[in-house]
Image 1 (cartoon, rainbow, N blue to C red):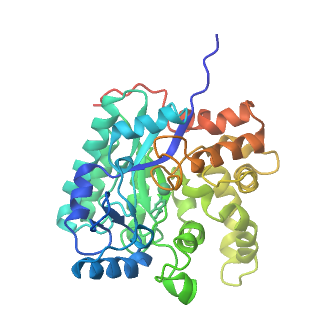
Image 2 (cartoon, rainbow, N blue to C red):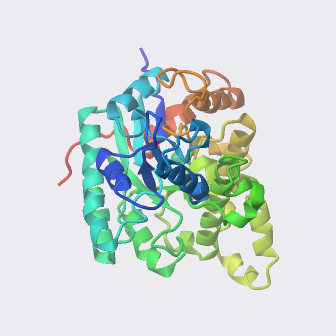
Length: 393
Ligand code: 5CU
Ligand code: ZN
């Protein structure tokens, strides 16, 4: 009997316990704080959460309780740090394999002299989780982006030998000045040469002013503007900057997996292409370079974390040209442990997961070969999940 294609979640995060301890010891965002009258501490990650954080801290100092709905960040439940909880979540949703990654803001804020050691310990923690659940867990390693270059490059060489590591997770900040920073190029080159896929994920969004007085730090519009719009634009801008800098042409082995189906890149690639062709400064160079479409077809993969068949169809079309060849470049994800259900048991099914799974079914047909590819077959092939996880020399 033919074996069923596994369901693989390529976008699923954790904060290992040693990382949580660091957040607990901090005085600024990213931070973990407990408040009176609430069972779970809060994990506060985004700069837009500063006002509710200050208000809740001031209330606590006065001995007052803040209503749960006004607390900053999100409750730090077991979903964030427990591997048993991850496995339970996978079992509940029919997910056979997860490719774990540290959640944002990764090691971006860590002091330079501590970053290398923390990266080694976080990556060892992920390795141990994978080893305890062979065949079910793999991971994207965390990089010490604030460490001196030799330490960062040594980390890349080290993680490439870790048996369950299949790539790295990276924010759009790079070493602090973005991914198109010339100092970032040797890092990207090393990742490409090592065959490590970069899972590119947003964190910083757009400057707070764009959200207006009601959408910024007041909390009136919750997290909707920074998460639904800021995150995708951040990814779009980071990849477009890399493209304009010519990095994809210089580093043909570079492979990026873009979070949230590439932000708005599938929708805007045509406009980017047109702007390049009509820019007096760029068009001559553009003639000898591959286009943004070539990059999408050859060096970029997209996750399927887009929550609707409409966006998913655009992502598939943008990834593979007119023949729909992009079906082989999309990979299912959940974004667990973010977006838990607000009104049902967190140990049950999550609507944020079924929205993504349903989008695949609606776009491609329930039980179709192409749906199975996006739900897991592509990840198995692209991330070499069939390779036995043995210690490499
Ligand atoms: O809800 C959020 O803030 C987030 C986040 O920080 N990171 C992520 O991947 N998804 C949602
Ligand atoms: Zn995510």
